[in-house]
Length: 379
Ligand SMILES: Cc1ncc(COP(=O)(O)O)c(C=O)c1O
Image (cartoon, rainbow, N blue to C red; front, top):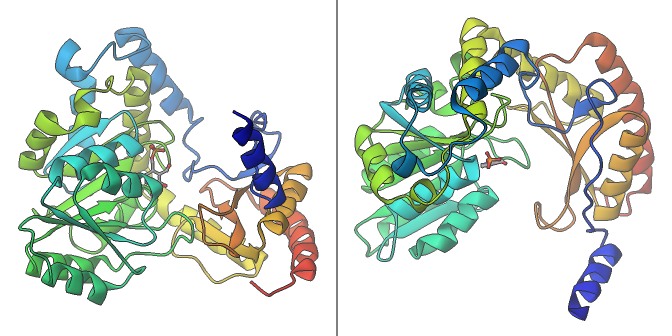
């Protein structure tokens, strides 16, 4: 296994070593790294939702829901999520990753075509690989390219995959146009709303809803419960027909232990908070705009504020400098982003306070000025 050390040394030289750092407990650092966009993960009602579900159902789901049975809470969560985004039905998975693998492999197999945006999340990339379909990668946000790939196909069945809000840059997919071409070409559009749910659309109903596409029969939404809802797990929100097909054939549903009761209870409670306070979604976008102003980058369309610095080591050093001063930030380097575009990734939270924004302005202002002064090539 000496090759492992050689690979590790290569990653150190390239500034790409990853480390598992101890996580600060609440209040020790200002959190601009997590995906807890609405600040719900520690909300008393959300915690209580998890605790009550654990008391009733136990710590684990005890098996695949097809084997040990489904709880009423799982089904309620599915109905509530579907109703919220305007889809006819829902099915929850153990994670957003599993939801993406499950839906793509179940809807496209050998003999199908999958067209995926070049910026699609890693879980969609892996889903393409697992599907055994012919896979074409369309340039980022290029609807004409998607149309050409669909038009040229020989396969009857085709899926088009995209994030609604792209995870690295926080930019938006052209969903209306994509849906127009997928429908015209008889394909199905799968939209990953991991970063759109709770942030975009009226009251956080997502970008699909905002674009007026909720409930379209040839559109499938995937979502995670681990970001805006502050819990854990994933969901597919689509027609009853798709739900039934997934129960019969999605391997990550059939052969995976059901979503843990605590996650179900927490997600239901978080959805309740979001329904009661629909202004949460707008507040997270306002705070993202504040962060972008502080960082001197373009105004964002989502909770993700990307500050591109260039070299991996430069971005890493800037992230460490922020952390040393009590600011927890994300750092994206290859292969998460293209070579030469390593960056700080700041995520806004709806509950950032004016005092926290003042500290962020001071720390980020200094760290970014130093990092930008060291750039060899402007990013
Ligand atoms: C766009 C996107 N899709 C899917 C996932 C996977 O979701 P989960 O963390 O629930 O597995 C993530 C993030 O982790 C994501 O950013």
